[in-house]
Image 1 (tube, rainbow, N blue to C red):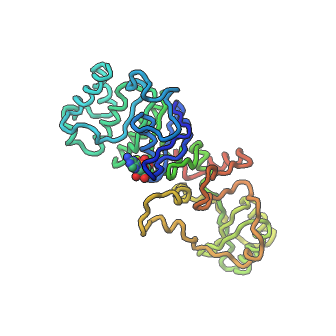
Image 2 (cartoon, rainbow, N blue to C red):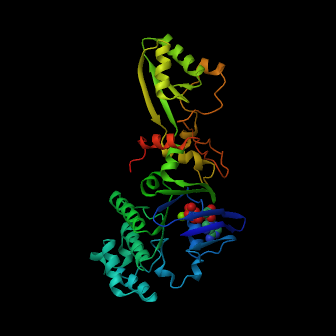
Image 3 (cartoon, rainbow, N blue to C red):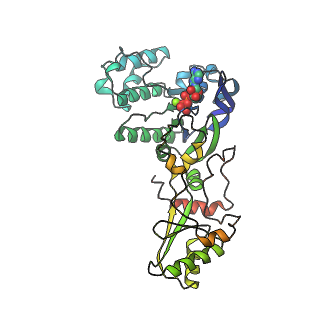
Length: 372
Ligand SMILES: Nc1ncnc2c1ncn2[C@@H]1O[C@H](COP(=O)(O)OP(=O)(O)O)[C@@H](O)[C@H]1O
Ligand SMILES: [Mg+2]
């Protein structure tokens, strides 16, 4: 177990990590997610005693890293795959670290086999591809058969096969009861790998929750409903009826209506009562990637002037129909539909807990975003 309490790191005027408190538990893959420059590596360095916190503290199994006897046997880490002597052969590199920690030589061959580097064990590391370097870094982390493992962006630069391999390895290590803490700036990757997420932006905690819970909270549901194209009056009548019933209704470019705040059966009943013939009524979810980018948008340190994400923050190509402007928006969101917090909503608790978690859990099961 890793426990951070009020962990803070300042470099001069720059606050890289800002009062972070969290726990990383054994038996889980905990994803450490945040944009570039949000403080992930700095946090990991503090966990490993490589950087001294300006304030707060962090412990591994109750002790600061530096107080752990023979730390290599308790904690393994991959921070930077290039941080090794390029002139050394892979096996020699591992052997030198093993010898420093009293780890038997046969363990070197074991970890080489685990990461699939047996055939290149006698090649010099400087000739390794990025993927081979990452595998060697992972082998180094596994040497002491540690209970706690930290990996800083381990899939960066890997091909799809390598990514899948790392993902399965992390899960296997967690299934063995180990504490696995892995960072990434990619939501999509973490959604597939981690079962718990700690999300930071500008060094601050934005979310600390189960991946499934995160997905449920942050991919807002909506319904698309479309009256028969041959019946424009019916479409207007439908919009008015849904808005009066408390739905938030937006017009989509193809003439369909995007509705939040009403369950699908209710929309069907209302359309039926209004005598409107439907050509479409379908459930949808906003993408998780979009939710993550919205959440961290205000905390992204470096954005290009042509930020590809900009379009996510443009008003959607939807218009508010006349009937919607006349009616006040319902104040209480209806159960089953949650919108992601608006950009900049920030704060310590940007995620409202659902009033009825059961319903949300049920909705999450149908979530096409979660392909695990
Ligand atoms: N040694 C350092 N000196 C000064 N600033 C640093 C140092 N290390 C990191 N930073 C700054 O701290 C912030 C967080 O960096 P980092 O922890 O590397 O983020 P991440 O790993 O999430 O990309 C960045 O703004 C970075 O420039
Ligand atoms: Mg980093």
